[in-house]
Length: 351
Image (cartoon, rainbow, N blue to C red; front, side, top):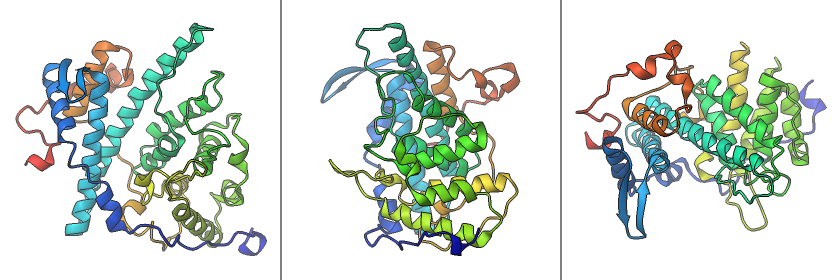
């Protein structure tokens, strides 16, 4: 197949697409120190009562994983702030952030699975699925894991998300699934990863198949025709910028989560899978591909530090079967990490 046989043209970059500098500033969460302080207290003391302006609440493992989200946002911002001010991108900060994100998501999945099980076992009882799962960010995260070579982590989550789409539970698990929200980019990712890893029969909605560009990429993502692939990927880059808009009451966009504006997760996914197959990748000259977030990085070993380890251990005090794979004799590194009590190196802003 060549360019003459496909009728897919470039859109160009969306004229209101934000600058990279504005994007970096939007990630600044320096006002969330209270959440980090509460997490530090939890690590030292365990569950405690906290008095806030909204009343008293019990700070527990659920709040701890939310607090971990504040840490990961700081790491993302730090890596990009250094790039902006010193022209140095510390990929390790970003890798640490998405490793925190992975375990935050794993705990959310664990709790969601418990809710689904409860729902199935109590037919006729009104059980509310307590989920904050959205295709627009959870599935998009898969491409960021793949950007840093976290293949096993992405594979694990992909399989779970495919389960959700095929779920027999008569409640939506993803809040924005289906043809109403038409998250076409995210469905494309799931189609591609399903074909690559599982080849399962998945009941995707109609909108998963009505974008010609995505259908061409499903057919040609592993082509050896670099000219064809470059064109399709540049079209995909353009589309990414045009989809970078906030949802409204009547219109929905694939990149409505602004944190993905300069994270071309759909392109990362294709490039990583091609790399795994030993295929050549084209060099893409595009605004979303020329920043440090546009690159794919060498595969990395699973990340762990003492902060994350202590949170996981506290979670297992309440839920002993959570994260079992980290605490088996075959994968003993989680139990052998030295706990740093004097120097909290994850708190880089306090050095």
